[in-house]
Image (cartoon, rainbow, N blue to C red; front, side, top):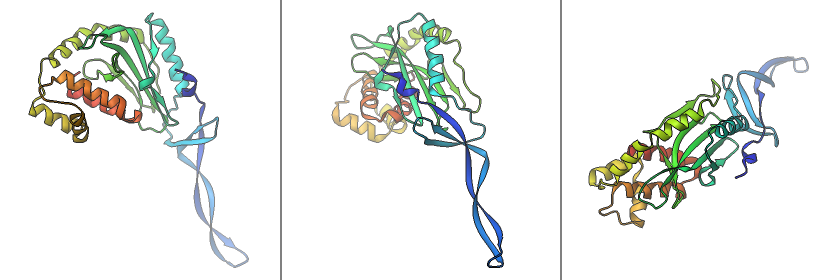
Length: 261
Protein backbone atom coordinates (compact mmCIF):
# COMPACT_ATOMS: atom_id res chain seq x y z
CA UNK A 1 0.00 0.00 0.00
CA UNK A 2 1.34 3.43 -0.95
CA UNK A 3 1.76 5.54 2.18
CA UNK A 4 2.45 8.70 0.17
CA UNK A 5 -1.28 9.38 -0.06
CA UNK A 6 -1.40 9.54 3.76
CA UNK A 7 1.39 12.11 3.91
CA UNK A 8 -0.05 15.16 2.15
CA UNK A 9 1.24 18.47 3.58
CA UNK A 10 -0.82 20.34 6.17
CA UNK A 11 -0.30 23.68 7.89
CA UNK A 12 -1.86 26.07 10.36
CA UNK A 13 -3.16 29.48 9.29
CA UNK A 14 -4.78 32.39 11.03
CA UNK A 15 -8.56 32.71 11.09
CA UNK A 16 -10.40 35.96 10.50
CA UNK A 17 -14.08 36.63 11.00
CA UNK A 18 -16.33 39.38 9.79
CA UNK A 19 -16.88 42.08 12.39
CA UNK A 20 -19.37 44.93 12.00
CA UNK A 21 -18.21 48.34 13.20
CA UNK A 22 -19.87 51.74 13.32
CA UNK A 23 -18.44 54.50 11.13
CA UNK A 24 -19.43 58.13 10.64
CA UNK A 25 -20.37 58.77 7.03
CA UNK A 26 -19.57 62.40 6.15
CA UNK A 27 -21.69 62.22 2.99
CA UNK A 28 -24.88 61.29 4.80
CA UNK A 29 -23.83 62.92 8.08
CA UNK A 30 -24.83 59.73 9.93
CA UNK A 31 -23.60 56.51 11.48
CA UNK A 32 -23.30 53.44 9.19
CA UNK A 33 -22.25 49.86 9.84
CA UNK A 34 -19.48 48.28 7.79
CA UNK A 35 -18.01 44.79 7.86
CA UNK A 36 -14.29 44.42 8.44
CA UNK A 37 -12.06 41.36 8.98
CA UNK A 38 -10.94 40.70 12.55
CA UNK A 39 -8.31 38.21 13.68
CA UNK A 40 -9.60 35.36 15.86
CA UNK A 41 -7.48 34.92 18.98
CA UNK A 42 -9.06 31.59 19.98
CA UNK A 43 -9.06 29.62 16.74
CA UNK A 44 -6.85 28.61 13.83
CA UNK A 45 -7.36 26.87 10.50
CA UNK A 46 -5.90 23.54 9.39
CA UNK A 47 -5.19 23.67 5.66
CA UNK A 48 -4.18 21.01 3.15
CA UNK A 49 -1.25 22.86 1.58
CA UNK A 50 -1.01 21.09 -1.77
CA UNK A 51 -4.50 22.14 -2.88
CA UNK A 52 -5.28 24.96 -0.41
CA UNK A 53 -8.30 23.10 0.99
CA UNK A 54 -9.71 24.05 4.39
CA UNK A 55 -9.86 20.90 6.52
CA UNK A 56 -11.10 22.32 9.82
CA UNK A 57 -11.20 25.20 12.29
CA UNK A 58 -9.73 24.19 15.66
CA UNK A 59 -9.09 25.89 18.97
CA UNK A 60 -5.82 27.66 19.69
CA UNK A 61 -4.54 24.85 21.97
CA UNK A 62 -4.69 22.23 19.22
CA UNK A 63 -1.26 20.83 18.33
CA UNK A 64 -1.02 19.76 14.71
CA UNK A 65 0.54 16.30 14.31
CA UNK A 66 0.86 15.60 10.56
CA UNK A 67 0.24 12.05 9.37
CA UNK A 68 3.75 12.02 7.90
CA UNK A 69 5.35 12.75 11.28
CA UNK A 70 3.27 10.04 12.91
CA UNK A 71 3.97 7.47 10.18
CA UNK A 72 7.71 8.25 10.09
CA UNK A 73 7.95 7.66 13.85
CA UNK A 74 5.89 4.49 13.51
CA UNK A 75 8.06 3.06 10.73
CA UNK A 76 11.24 3.82 12.66
CA UNK A 77 9.91 1.96 15.69
CA UNK A 78 8.57 -0.95 13.60
CA UNK A 79 11.96 -1.59 12.02
CA UNK A 80 13.46 -1.80 15.50
CA UNK A 81 11.14 -4.65 16.46
CA UNK A 82 12.85 -7.14 14.09
CA UNK A 83 9.40 -8.49 13.25
CA UNK A 84 8.02 -8.87 9.75
CA UNK A 85 5.14 -6.45 9.19
CA UNK A 86 2.80 -5.41 6.40
CA UNK A 87 0.43 -2.50 5.76
CA UNK A 88 -3.05 -4.05 5.70
CA UNK A 89 -5.11 -2.25 3.00
CA UNK A 90 -8.54 -3.65 3.95
CA UNK A 91 -8.76 -1.62 7.15
CA UNK A 92 -6.52 1.34 6.31
CA UNK A 93 -7.87 4.55 4.84
CA UNK A 94 -7.14 8.25 4.59
CA UNK A 95 -9.40 11.26 4.18
CA UNK A 96 -8.49 14.94 4.40
CA UNK A 97 -9.65 15.06 8.02
CA UNK A 98 -8.92 11.52 9.28
CA UNK A 99 -6.75 8.48 8.75
CA UNK A 100 -6.51 4.92 10.00
CA UNK A 101 -3.55 2.63 9.42
CA UNK A 102 -3.44 -1.08 10.21
CA UNK A 103 -0.09 -2.84 10.58
CA UNK A 104 -0.20 -6.64 10.37
CA UNK A 105 2.40 -8.96 11.89
CA UNK A 106 1.89 -12.13 9.79
CA UNK A 107 4.23 -14.31 11.86
CA UNK A 108 2.56 -13.47 15.20
CA UNK A 109 -0.64 -15.46 15.02
CA UNK A 110 -3.54 -16.34 17.30
CA UNK A 111 -5.38 -19.61 16.80
CA UNK A 112 -9.12 -19.71 16.30
CA UNK A 113 -11.47 -22.09 14.49
CA UNK A 114 -9.94 -21.34 11.06
CA UNK A 115 -6.91 -23.05 9.48
CA UNK A 116 -4.61 -20.01 9.51
CA UNK A 117 -5.90 -18.18 12.57
CA UNK A 118 -5.54 -14.43 13.10
CA UNK A 119 -2.45 -12.26 12.67
CA UNK A 120 -1.66 -9.73 15.39
CA UNK A 121 -2.27 -6.15 14.21
CA UNK A 122 -1.62 -2.60 15.34
CA UNK A 123 -4.07 0.20 14.56
CA UNK A 124 -3.06 3.88 14.37
CA UNK A 125 -5.59 6.74 14.10
CA UNK A 126 -5.11 10.46 13.54
CA UNK A 127 -7.42 13.37 12.75
CA UNK A 128 -7.15 17.04 11.79
CA UNK A 129 -10.63 18.09 12.93
CA UNK A 130 -10.60 17.10 16.63
CA UNK A 131 -13.06 14.29 15.93
CA UNK A 132 -10.63 12.01 17.77
CA UNK A 133 -7.16 12.14 19.24
CA UNK A 134 -4.22 10.04 18.15
CA UNK A 135 -5.11 6.44 18.97
CA UNK A 136 -2.96 3.33 18.98
CA UNK A 137 -4.36 -0.05 19.92
CA UNK A 138 -3.89 -3.75 19.21
CA UNK A 139 -6.08 -6.19 17.36
CA UNK A 140 -5.84 -8.85 14.67
CA UNK A 141 -6.94 -9.71 11.16
CA UNK A 142 -8.36 -13.08 10.24
CA UNK A 143 -6.53 -14.67 7.30
CA UNK A 144 -9.52 -16.57 5.91
CA UNK A 145 -11.74 -13.52 5.28
CA UNK A 146 -9.75 -10.38 6.24
CA UNK A 147 -12.01 -9.71 9.24
CA UNK A 148 -10.61 -6.90 11.36
CA UNK A 149 -10.65 -7.54 15.12
CA UNK A 150 -9.92 -5.21 18.04
CA UNK A 151 -8.69 -6.58 21.38
CA UNK A 152 -9.51 -3.50 23.43
CA UNK A 153 -10.41 -5.32 26.63
CA UNK A 154 -7.32 -7.52 26.92
CA UNK A 155 -4.47 -5.58 25.33
CA UNK A 156 -3.03 -2.14 25.98
CA UNK A 157 -4.16 0.95 24.09
CA UNK A 158 -3.02 4.56 23.91
CA UNK A 159 -4.95 7.78 23.43
CA UNK A 160 -3.14 11.07 22.92
CA UNK A 161 -4.93 14.42 22.88
CA UNK A 162 -3.99 16.90 20.17
CA UNK A 163 -3.63 19.56 22.83
CA UNK A 164 -0.57 17.72 24.20
CA UNK A 165 1.16 16.41 21.08
CA UNK A 166 2.34 12.86 20.58
CA UNK A 167 5.44 10.73 20.31
CA UNK A 168 5.59 6.98 19.69
CA UNK A 169 7.94 5.40 22.19
CA UNK A 170 8.69 1.90 23.37
CA UNK A 171 6.73 0.23 20.55
CA UNK A 172 9.07 -2.78 20.66
CA UNK A 173 8.38 -3.30 24.37
CA UNK A 174 4.66 -2.83 23.79
CA UNK A 175 4.74 -5.45 21.02
CA UNK A 176 6.60 -7.92 23.24
CA UNK A 177 4.17 -7.36 26.10
CA UNK A 178 1.23 -7.70 23.74
CA UNK A 179 2.52 -10.96 22.33
CA UNK A 180 3.01 -12.30 25.85
CA UNK A 181 -0.73 -11.77 26.43
CA UNK A 182 -1.78 -13.87 23.44
CA UNK A 183 -2.40 -16.90 25.70
CA UNK A 184 -5.03 -14.79 27.53
CA UNK A 185 -6.72 -14.03 24.21
CA UNK A 186 -6.43 -17.69 23.23
CA UNK A 187 -8.11 -18.74 26.45
CA UNK A 188 -10.95 -16.27 25.91
CA UNK A 189 -11.43 -17.51 22.32
CA UNK A 190 -11.70 -21.07 23.63
CA UNK A 191 -14.35 -19.92 26.12
CA UNK A 192 -16.34 -18.20 23.37
CA UNK A 193 -16.18 -21.37 21.33
CA UNK A 194 -17.89 -23.23 24.17
CA UNK A 195 -20.66 -20.68 24.84
CA UNK A 196 -23.96 -20.75 22.98
CA UNK A 197 -25.86 -17.67 21.85
CA UNK A 198 -28.89 -17.61 24.15
CA UNK A 199 -31.70 -15.08 24.44
CA UNK A 200 -29.85 -13.02 27.05
CA UNK A 201 -26.76 -12.70 24.84
CA UNK A 202 -28.92 -11.93 21.83
CA UNK A 203 -30.49 -9.04 23.79
CA UNK A 204 -27.07 -7.82 24.93
CA UNK A 205 -25.83 -7.94 21.32
CA UNK A 206 -28.75 -5.84 20.08
CA UNK A 207 -28.30 -3.27 22.85
CA UNK A 208 -24.56 -2.82 22.35
CA UNK A 209 -24.15 -3.33 18.59
CA UNK A 210 -27.65 -2.59 17.30
CA UNK A 211 -30.80 -4.43 16.26
CA UNK A 212 -30.32 -3.60 12.58
CA UNK A 213 -26.94 -5.31 12.35
CA UNK A 214 -28.17 -8.31 14.32
CA UNK A 215 -31.23 -8.69 12.07
CA UNK A 216 -29.12 -8.35 8.92
CA UNK A 217 -26.76 -11.09 10.13
CA UNK A 218 -29.72 -13.28 11.14
CA UNK A 219 -31.32 -12.88 7.70
CA UNK A 220 -28.20 -14.18 5.97
CA UNK A 221 -27.13 -16.84 8.48
CA UNK A 222 -28.73 -19.54 10.59
CA UNK A 223 -28.06 -18.39 14.15
CA UNK A 224 -29.68 -21.40 15.79
CA UNK A 225 -27.29 -23.33 18.02
CA UNK A 226 -24.19 -21.36 17.02
CA UNK A 227 -21.43 -20.48 19.46
CA UNK A 228 -20.51 -16.97 20.54
CA UNK A 229 -17.21 -17.36 18.67
CA UNK A 230 -19.08 -18.10 15.45
CA UNK A 231 -21.27 -15.05 16.01
CA UNK A 232 -18.17 -12.98 16.73
CA UNK A 233 -16.72 -13.97 13.35
CA UNK A 234 -20.01 -13.22 11.59
CA UNK A 235 -20.10 -9.78 13.24
CA UNK A 236 -16.48 -8.89 12.45
CA UNK A 237 -17.03 -10.05 8.87
CA UNK A 238 -20.07 -7.78 8.61
CA UNK A 239 -18.17 -4.82 10.06
CA UNK A 240 -15.15 -5.38 7.82
CA UNK A 241 -17.07 -5.73 4.58
CA UNK A 242 -20.38 -3.90 5.05
CA UNK A 243 -19.63 -0.92 7.30
CA UNK A 244 -17.93 2.21 5.96
CA UNK A 245 -14.26 2.39 6.89
CA UNK A 246 -14.77 5.60 8.90
CA UNK A 247 -17.17 3.79 11.26
CA UNK A 248 -15.48 0.38 11.53
CA UNK A 249 -13.37 1.22 14.59
CA UNK A 250 -16.43 2.18 16.62
CA UNK A 251 -18.16 -1.14 15.93
CA UNK A 252 -14.96 -3.17 16.34
CA UNK A 253 -14.46 -1.60 19.77
CA UNK A 254 -18.07 -2.34 20.71
CA UNK A 255 -17.59 -5.97 19.61
CA UNK A 256 -14.43 -6.16 21.76
CA UNK A 257 -16.46 -5.08 24.81
CA UNK A 258 -19.39 -7.35 24.04
CA UNK A 259 -17.29 -10.50 23.60
CA UNK A 260 -14.78 -9.44 26.30
CA UNK A 261 -11.76 -9.62 24.02
